Image 1 (cartoon, rainbow, N blue to C red):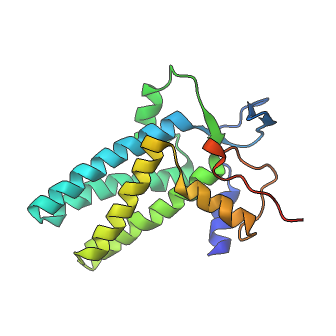
Image 2 (image 1 turned 90 degrees about the vertical axis):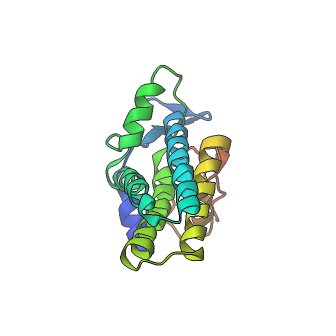
Length: 192
């Protein structure tokens, strides 16, 4: 599992902006606009909540498939190709383009999206392939919705916090440059 994440995280995503300074430190790594990320999480949260309540009220799980497919595509493209080609990111990038960008490192965001991609993929297997309904998909959906709400409304990236924790425990290789995280969520003190 560690090697899978390392291989995935080794390919740079995001935009490298020469001379960019974030939090008073040079940022010679791929960065993303946090405003676009939060807006994207917000629209996915709205789609997820609407689907969640439709499925709960109708007891018809077929409504899950279009929403889950859209969200899975967003995460898949974001993880493997970057947000430049991700459908919701394209939409929100156009909407927030006149706002001052708030750059953050791309590597920890990719890590968080990979976790969400694994949850979305597990939902495809659980609900789509094995046709399991009930508490298991309800818990997974609730976790995903909570994470999207925290990201969009509060600016808290739980995946970024997990990334920082794994760096501090040396589970992941320490990057050459510590990525700038919103609210210093993935800051860590390297062991000597």
